[in-house]
Image 1: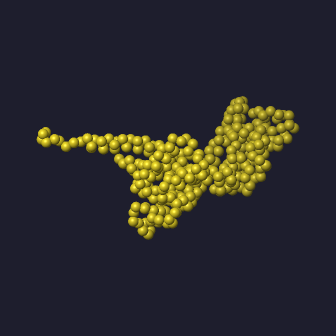
Image 2: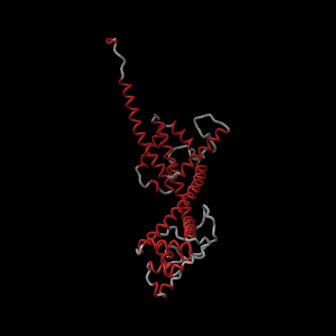
Image 3: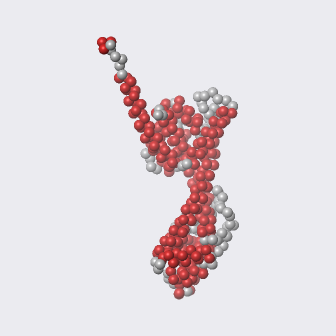
Amino acid sequence: MFGSAILEVVVGIVFIYILVSVLCTAIREGIESWLKTRAAYLEHGIRELLHDKSGSDLATAFYNHPLIFSLFPNGYAPRAPKARPGLLAKGDNLPSYIPASNFALALMDIAARGPQAGNAAGDASTSAISLEAIRKNVAHIANPAVQRVLLMAVDAAQGDINKAKTLIEAWYNSAMDRVSGWYRRSTQRIIFCIALLLVIVLNVNTFTIADHLYRNDAVRSVMIARAEKAATDAGYAASKYEDIRKELGSLNLPIGWPEGFRKPLLGRDLNGPADWLILIFGWLLTAFAATLGAPFWFDVLNKVMVIRSTVKPHEKSREEASEDRQPPSASKQ
């Protein structure tokens, strides 16, 4: 079984991964608030869902519908169609989130009353949205694929308009699950790039830190105390960039470039390619760990803490037993 010193080093490394993960997430959120990439992915997903890849037909009518238009400023201007938005695509003024209820109601209203808002007041026969009105006027949506989906929802609802709405919402939500997958994968790539740049600039090397912690009991104890405090703080993952950066710099670890380039394992006599390999792999390991996210490492931290709490009493009891063990007296020989 691992000794407590090894487990404490693991706790320290996991805590560093949490700090780097939170830093990367904060930077990523700052980039997202500026670019609104999620809005670009959402628009692309809606175009595909509505079978309008150019965005000039049903997608335009959808985004200009009052229920959707109220979610973002200015008007909707379809952009050039792409296979999929890039990692740093701009969402401009588009909404990053559209509730499923808004989607279903807007689509049902367009089918029953037409894409133009003025049609609702001008045609008394479609003054109320009903399954009959949707079936009768579904040609307002000049899109055979979407027409078929709406007619299937009307048929399956069996006269219950709320059930038809629920079926359309389920259709939308299944498509949004795929959009979320696209966005999540792009976010992981971006966070890895951010993490790699960050760990090189700050020189956060897993191997260097592990070597330093193993050889310094005092620093290791401070790391354990900080990690235990973070593990019990539910809001720690939402800490500000400045606070995490300040804590990372206060840990008395071999982080940064105060002395320029130095050996990655401070207690070993390594030279040449070995130093560079350890340095590069240490950076890559830290960057890859950061892409897993702070919630993942908080879970790992709690599990390692539980293991450590069982190992330390076990080691202490063995030491006490060895002190109590006395050699047999001469009278008993």
